[in-house]
Length: 214
Image 1 (cartoon, rainbow, N blue to C red):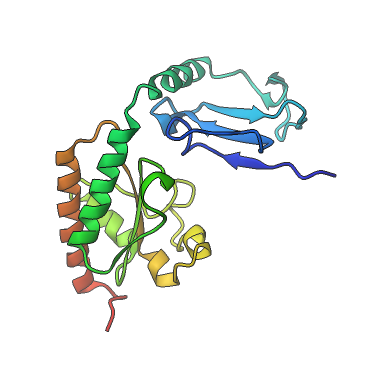
Image 2: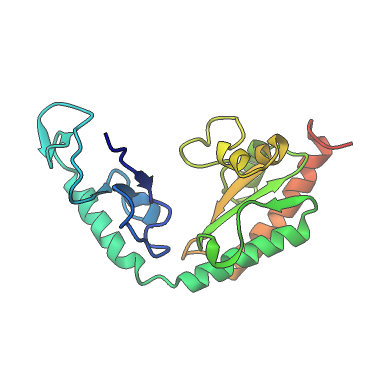
């Protein structure tokens, strides 16, 4: 039987152009575009048939039991409408300012992934050698800068990102990574503040880090 191809396009939706011609299914999340939590969308190619994975009183296209969350769905629809008015060029500019600021201020910092148009406009993922990503996350939160040590799905798992390992990062490099997102609500002042706090925070942690280099 033919294998179906599904992608989680939540981080791409509203940020880059999507061509779904070569996929069978694609999923999107409301909260990723600043809409309410609890709503999502599933693209299903016209000739694809899928079965429910949870059974009960099926109501949502006969795929999901229980009633639809109408307020969240309406909020998702409005968020999808509003996301098109956001200037992604500005977001990309702030992203690059954050990347270059951190790389210039912090020694032994590595950008994970490509630069420029090949990168999602709001995504910044940087590894810091000789320090743990989880420690950086905690330190920065006390400084008013909120980042994560991995994707939302795995941020509570104290293991290096399997994605970073797959693209060739060493264990220590992946273990010292943090993920940051630039939003329409950020300003250049916010970026400068974040760069300063990241620089100070990482330098502080390296002085006491159990994984610091020789």
